[in-house]
Image (cartoon, rainbow, N blue to C red; front, side):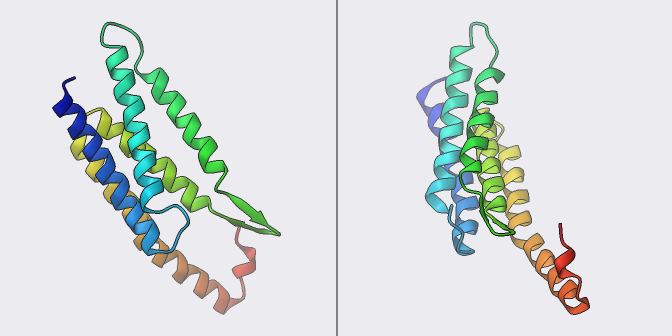
Length: 148
């Protein structure tokens, strides 16, 4: 892989993480612009490394599998429990998704990266509105405390 392709792949990964991080920061979440951008970039760097190391044979998925495991560990550190309330699950899941789009960008799957980012932002914005609406309606009916 030449330096221009390397730069393009990292740029796409950074842009993907930036868009996801912008949405998180806009909603005042703890993992925002820098975190999601760095997660996407780091994942992309590991995948590009894996691609380059395995050009003459080997399994590119081995490093990708370790990226997934490592990001899962990072996400676990974001989740907090306070009494019966749990915080940070969506943020942890978003970081996991940022890693995934970084891996796709590194593999040269640019259109798929864009579609993945669109879905992630959709879930974190529009489905949040639906979730809030459901909670409000359950509160009106006195059933909000029955949420799992």
